[in-house]
Image 1 (cartoon, one colour):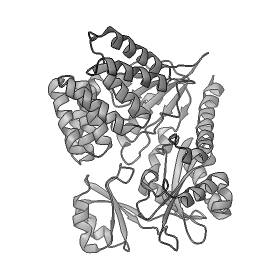
Image 2 (tube, one colour):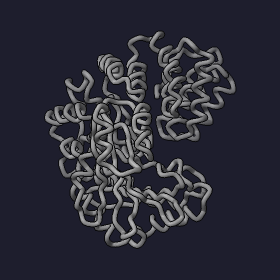
Image 3 (cartoon, helix red, strand yellow):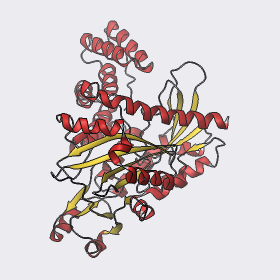
Image 4 (cartoon, helix red, strand yellow):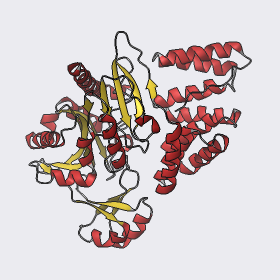
Length: 463
């Protein structure tokens, strides 16, 4: 999300509070920053900077509904400022409100036709809608003005300087909590941009965050070109990420002891019906390059294949064998284990009545029994999963050889891993402040600490 650069308002106290809030936010003192932003808005309710930047802070700390309210107020008071429209559009898009998001992106581009964030946001929206050619046209225009983004170091002493490679297309490893500003001085480079061919900023380590092999083939090639110009060690080099697409992973892990990998076929739309006949029902179908359950459906009747496929974007679709992860009561479980430098760390267990299991929509918050089961998994993963499953997970980690990645899976009746996906793009988010999630804080901190120590050790060893 973008910060504002508006002119000072008449109320100098509001301006003073606004600038104080910005300094506090830069130092990571979020609660104090919120206080001063709110105080500035109380004095000057139409202050664009306070409304916009409070929205950005709230969005960054996962208060997304409140963030959208702030952005909407900024737009209401300042309809001619493109930044407000861009931020509101991005927040709406993340919430799946594509029609509303598109409207605000269009307004932003009318106000500022060459704004890189408006072009990039529009490209992301069009990609989601399956308008790949239009998305690429907007994305290419955004590259012209895209520069290296710096996330400044806030700590004491010499930082670890990280060059983070990302794709403008998306599909990047989430690093918000991983590359914290108390330890790392981060320069973020979109590998497709014009800046990628220019001088590289000083760095001790390259973190290749281009993580979705199904979406980011050209970006992985561009990342390799950048790495050839760097002398620093690389984490998750593109050659290890490239063979982690859903179909490739299923093929690579087929036959691994303790792992049941689904059959996965990538097919063009014109071959869809014929390809589907090789699968038993129910059958899963999805568009490559999307996560969190987006553009992902289950086919229960062959007569429904074409109709369901019509709602999925893209020229190619993935057909995936359905692995039944239900228990005797019909509940579905999805475990997530992170792989950091070859070691396994339990992150979460989601339990749901719905086959499409995601932690943020699972039956966890209101189910103490589900939370107790998750706590047992986080406390003693080996005991909960069993020797066969843990050995299967270790074999997955060794075969993928990613420095940072994760595995989503269910458990079969014989203790086998029912593989859902394994790749670099797994997100590790700290739980919200609700005391119900206190049992999750330690395991999440353990994962983030392990990842940071791995990064620091790689940089130190090279130095």
